[in-house]
Length: 467
Image 1 (cartoon, rainbow, N blue to C red):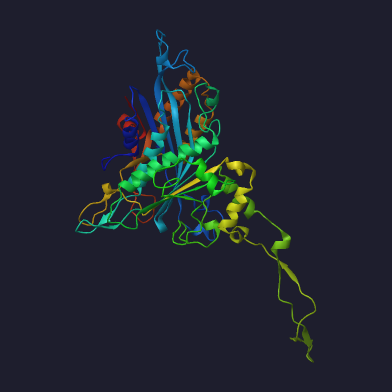
Image 2 (tube, rainbow, N blue to C red):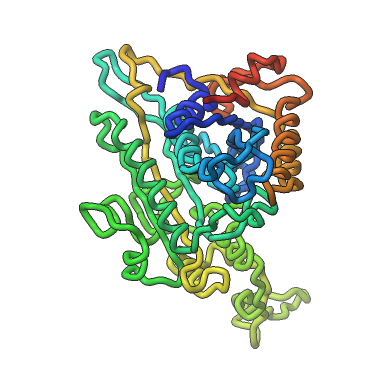
């Protein structure tokens, strides 16, 4: 990777390394940051005073394939088969949500959805797409280092938290794609193994490119499978040399680690409202809501100090003297989220219907003060991240809505849906983009300018074809 590469540059570079003679079209859309402190820690104390920015990222990969009469048939396996038409059809997609917390130099990357249609050649570009996105965000957007005049690293980049939960479903981003015979849906166990392999490769890449002069730089990986014991989790996950599931993986969660500084500037033990992020369509968020909305009068009733009797004076006034008979109960509202420990929270997750029998796995990867050797320069200078193009959140929502209403049940339908979405991407933001430098904070001098969506700009930042 060269220093000035954009997110699209790095994704295209990775996709181009997939073996075989294939033509892809890659699109990457990033929304403008919006301040939303209650989006990820909604029940934290004084959350509205926190500085939290949120951005949506959508990446789509289309592959040129022969369209007519090819539903579920390998084009190259049928000798003499006439293949008259080649069209771009979406084969992979990834949706991420990025939360930036400048106060603690922390970034949370939530892998919201990953999907494929099964309509392209093998191997699928899905794994490559996920890795390219995570590596670029970690190393280029948040991984710059500062060195002294001798070239030794003095400070590394931001702390990066990667969160996801794995649950097998027929489709996430491509409607009706389950109807296509070539789509193979992984089982719950198969999906957990797949994600474990993806995150292994991600952490290996991050660790191998971290400067040895930064001893505090480390990558910690956690996996939790509610409903399964640690021994059962060991049996499910693929083994690596050096340990049952690799020496860098911990079965459990990070929320009892007192040595870890979390994005809300807290260390355990403290309220789960400040520890456990709240994500869209996440089983953990649903449990947090239930805890927060618990209203048990028996639990929420506090008996106040008994009132003292007042002795009547000659003047007619009353004076405190002893205790009044009985006591008066005062009802108050308790913050139930703060009364539940991290250990109890995960015990409750074990008993939830949607998490029983190991059908859901939660992965957390913490890149603690992550750094890339690409960011290290001599003379005490800091390398700025590459420019990126950002669209208005409303435009991102329109693209997502258009994708949700598409049909990928057959290759012919998928080709039509792909054309519609690609045309909408070309018309992003009414012909203009917000070209920005820097991370979304008030203090870092973030530079932003509006640039017309010319063909050159589109190819540089948003969408590009490769062979």
